[in-house]
Each structure stands twice: as C-alpha cells, then as structure tokens.
Amino acid sequence: MRAKVYVTLKNGVHDPAGKAVVGGLNALGFPEVRDVRIGKFFEIELDETAGTGPDAEARLRLMCEKLLANMVIEKFRVELL
Image (cartoon, rainbow, N blue to C red; front, side, top):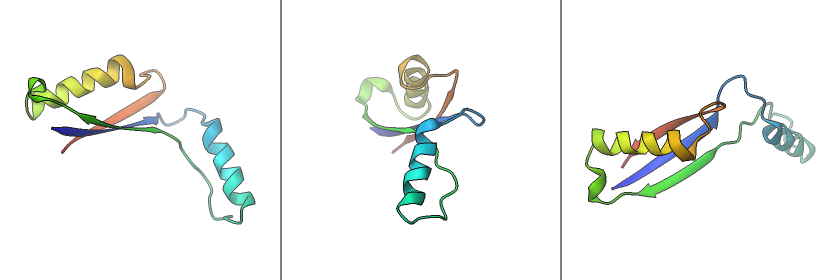
C-alpha cells in the first residue's frame, strides 16, 4: 500500500523561506505572486503489517505525530492510495 503525507505550517506561523521565494519570484518577473507557504511531502510504501484502511491511516497519523511533523507549528494530511 502506498500513502502520501503532506506536512504544512499551521495558519499564523511565520514562513521566512516562503517569503524569500515570493521575493525571488517577484524579482524574476512574476509580480502576481503574493504569498508562498513551504511544506514537506512524503510518499510512503507500507507493507501488509500496517493493516488496511483505517488501521493503516492510524499508523500513518502516529508516524506524523511522532516524527514527520512538528505538531507545535505544523499540520498534516494523509492520503492512502
């Protein structure tokens, strides 16, 4: 089973790297860019021991809470494929 995990900053958390990208894009002739939020993307291959459906999603959520996301400033979204 394959899963996709998206980790992004929570609303209200300052994103200095995103601001730098905005400045760079504006300087390169893309003045329409007003905001960029940078995050992380993980594609994870699970074996059958993860279970199926709700069990696998619960395991992925636990992975995010323990390692993949900083729960203080980030949020995550999991997709099972």
